Length: 375
Image 1: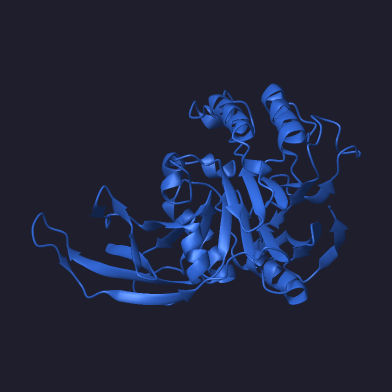
Image 2 (image 1 turned 60 degrees about the vertical axis):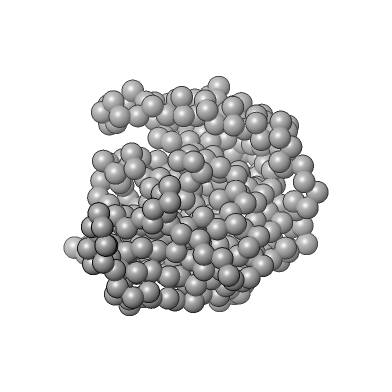
């Protein structure tokens, strides 16, 4: 996308019952969206923000779903002074928006891009050629390679921009590589979150989803983390939160047709390596709550750099007990110029229709692996 202010098209992230429209910019500016007659500003306690690289507007989901369009507005800041701040004239870009349909929903899932952009986007395009334009994009962790350089976060917005054009929603989940590097502690400033939390629910169309964040994939005391990780307590908080979801009966709404769990780490499954198979008690409790109280239709994951679906009771379900089918959806390989290899990525597409769910793996070479009926 070529624009003097915007790095990419906006990303329309679904968080609980709202959309967070987020935009990466090249220079300081004031920003808002207009939907119908309503203006929604990127503001902090009544002050429009300009000293940021990523803007965020909290938009009521029902408003954008009803209007099906929004106008992105901004003013470039020339000099933000205590008095008589100088700004340029207002600029505007109009975007159409397609809410997720109630049924026949086409979804594409990307995880473990590890800073690749072209390969995962190309894989998604091959999927679309067969199944049609996607209605919902899911980015499920490790989209940047790490958080040591703020420019890594651009990968998220480049992929979203290419696949959505700012016109359909995206669900975003954090991965373990996202926790590595100095900017990991401010990761939530550049990505969707709920009150700073990287775990939350999403209600979009007939889909209700729970995003669980396993954090890092080894014990907090692992020497690689250099005493910077406290994920044990972070996971304990999520256990309490899961029980609050059950107590609040959020997933008992009869209009919910599909229940999803989205987690970068497929925590019900084992890697058969002690240093990775951690938190048996906590992950076991998560599985129990999900299976007995929430009863999801599908858990979408990445992390293992493999593609498969594990059903309850199959040969892979020998660890904590799958609460539902678990789809592990990614194979990334970085190219090596010296060896003459190129970037490779495989993801997964899903078709939700008439209460059923079908999975199809797709790669950047145009290979689509046969359809797996999940529900």
